[in-house]
Amino acid sequence: MLPYIELHDESLILLFGYGLLGFLALALAHLSHELACGRRPGPSEATTRFPDGLEEGHGPVPLFLVLLYAALAVWAVLYVLAHAFWGMDFGG
Image (cartoon, rainbow, N blue to C red; front, side, top):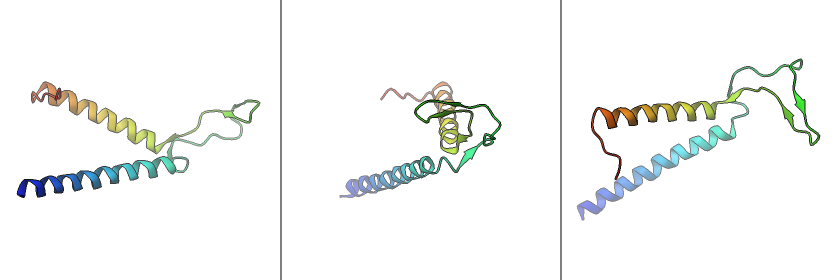
């Protein structure tokens, strides 16, 4: 039964690992209006107000999006390097 125990341990690690990553992503998305990079728009800056009460302007970028873009860039660079230099085939 040794292979099944190892498969069970792998599944638990993946479950908790992806669960934690998903929880952190949801927490960052929920707190994105508080955790933001950039300056807050002042009252003198020009904004456009639409009839339904929507307001357009230049606001800060949520930290969730900054981390998402950074992770995507790192993944893309590592993917290209792994395929080009180490010959890893990601085709399945």
